[in-house]
Amino acid sequence: MADYKVKKAADPINATVEVPGSKSITNRALLISALSDGRSFLKKVLFSDDSRVFIKALQDLGFLVAADESTEAATVTGQSKFVSASSGDIYVGSAGTAARFLTALLALSDGRFTIDASEQMRKRPMLPLFEALSRMGADFTFAEKEGFLPVTVKGAFCDENELLTDTAVVDSDSSTQFLSALLMMAPVIANRTGKPFRVQATGNRVQGSYVKMTLKVMKDFGVSAEFDRDNQMFSAAPGLTYKSREYEIEPDVSAASYFYAAAAVTGGEIIVNGVHPDSCQGDIRFLDVLKQMGCSLEDTAGGLKLTGPNGGKLRGISIDMKDFSDQTMTLAAIAPFCDSPVEITGIGHIRRQESDRISAIASELGRMGIDVEESEASLKIYPGTPAPAEIETYNDHRIAMAFSLVGLRTDGIVIKDYECCKKTFENYFEVFDTLTHS
Image (cartoon, rainbow, N blue to C red; front, side, top):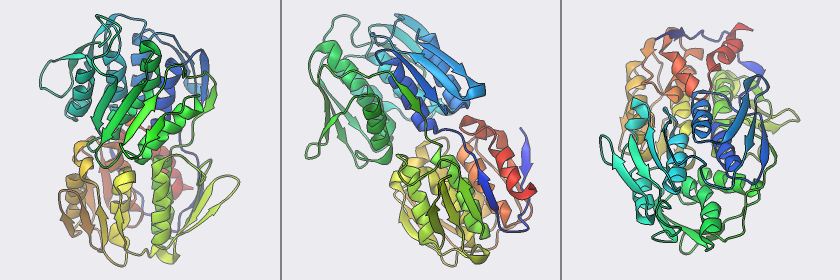
């Protein structure tokens, strides 16, 4: 495992940077293209550990996916069946989207498959999705612990062309990926059964940003799901088919946010090429948070430009980050440099992601001498001067990338096992280097 010593910024960060395509949109577009009526050409595809494992799993299932990393492109040939293979083993690594989306795909097939994952992904919860799919007729045999990977699945269509129910019920609170997985499958199921298929969602994140993203990508490929707000019910009718197309992936706003925060905390100026206010990604809201903290924003032809306050003197804030929680770590990393406490609420679900992120944030800020109040679903971070420290990353890419920001204002910050960022942004630290070595 390699360490990365952050170089303190001698001056405000002023730069224009490129970030890769959105991981979340990439994997949604890959699956929907595979379920479409022809050949799709995807541009600005993210190539990282998560997307590569997704592509490999689709290929192992018989889908034709030709990836060209040199041009950031992929050609995906859709097929009329859910899966051409009738059996097989797939590996989803640490990719939550691959694990959840492909479990739904295989559980609604007419085959028998084994799904395995990394040690990290084996610890992440999936029971609400397993329960929803079991009620529809899928059968799961858990190799180790009930509700967790690895698992062997017998598809709901193995014995006959009927589901036990035409309404899936799934909880959105622990992960909206469960809901997104069923939504993307809904039109395919409706066409197979010849009857409308509905997804009833429970919990407080039914209309969360990632669900909206899923619906947008579905619509971009020709399928609009209806939504009954009173009953929190989505529905797809027979006859709706994903249409193959050329499709360009948006730049990853989650990745862009680290660079915007770098400008904010140093009083500098950053443009991230291709990022604009109309992005469908929920993390675009993080830029509004930075604006409330004293930054200014301007939409330029190249991309959104953020200018930090003089001297990086940010204002404290209290904010519910339920709907863009991936930026909790980013906000936490710059919170010590604010003029008053930063309180982050609505984030209980991030305890069950790549790491227990609430605990990790509190531990690493504490390691630097910063006072933090931690509850089950919130953090309150007090201003202070971070001390030099070696930052544990917990094999969590977002901890590694976010805490690099502290080192722009504090000497002696070392990011341990920084290469874990390969999960979503493998050359993050190369791009980050350009901020202080230009």
